[in-house]
Length: 459
Image 1 (tube, rainbow, N blue to C red):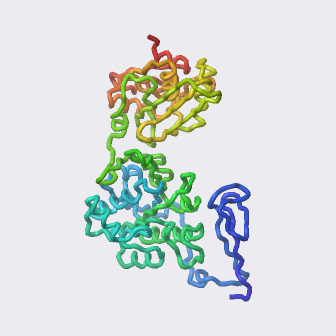
Image 2 (image 1 turned 60 degrees about the vertical axis):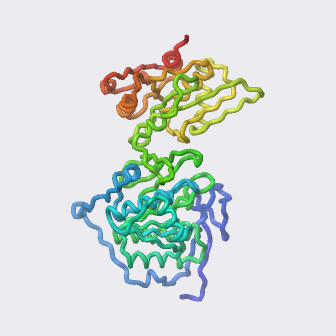
């Protein structure tokens, strides 16, 4: 080492702004938790990693690379396996995020027990709960697996030693924010610690073939803390969503190198743990009140899975000069757009109405295919005319009031027919009409005005 000291500073991973001290919010781009510690060593300094003999890589032709034929490890939990793309890939590293108390630890200890019974040894590392607490949860869920090992540990070196001793096929770290490495002087949970621990666990997964599942905390905005350092390192990013006051939880795939993104698994929180829902559409419509004004059925698509979800709307005369707009489960700005189209293109006097829109079961709809169902629900409440109980609705609404087609029409029609719907309202540009299931009538409309005339026949 030279006599000069190393220089330490912090750099924003979003915009590159530098500071001599750590800041929770970047002054330049206003992003939170984006400052990363950077250490610059004087010229001529030899680090420990550089002193060790380096393994020289060698470029090879594409034809010379042997394809790894290892299959996925199947999981008994079909919904979790679906989101992963068909099972757990050996040597993969998976990140699971979600709000506190949403059920991440409950779901993962169930998956760990099922994996230990069917496939191989599992090491569950908890940095937030003791082994006795984990045992109490396992007893409550009725979990018993001889090859499931529990340990409470936060030091990464100790975790790696346990992995070397047990040689598990699956390692679960709950959570990565409580794990720290001795190579960094910062506290656990900092950006540098999270990046260092995740990088070492990634090396472990790729060199030994051990599958690694990490639990990540989320920020106030609902994004995975890190900020995006973890998402770049891992192979799969899963987000567990849902309302803590509702029964249903959605496990959504945000990134997946081994399968389709935006895939969704549906679970129901019960006393026995996270129970998978095999037919989500039927469950979401179980409490539907038919022939009620302000209710419509949207045919959405989550990944490759079609879902039928009830959208409710309520309009009432506002007592104030500035009427309120409330959205639960739909994007607020998208709702504002649809209200403007209904007012401008159809002539609804919504400027004096309080409007409330809700998606049942605590589900969030993000795709534009639900636009038409939301607009029909608002119009149904405004006119006090119920939507026919056997009608499902799908379509995107443009600014001119035109209806635009959406993707995967065949999957949506089949799901509607399977649940007993007799009619589906779609845009006139809808393709694959020949693929419509028998007994399902397809109603076509070119504009929002035509769609409202078909969905809400005047009495």
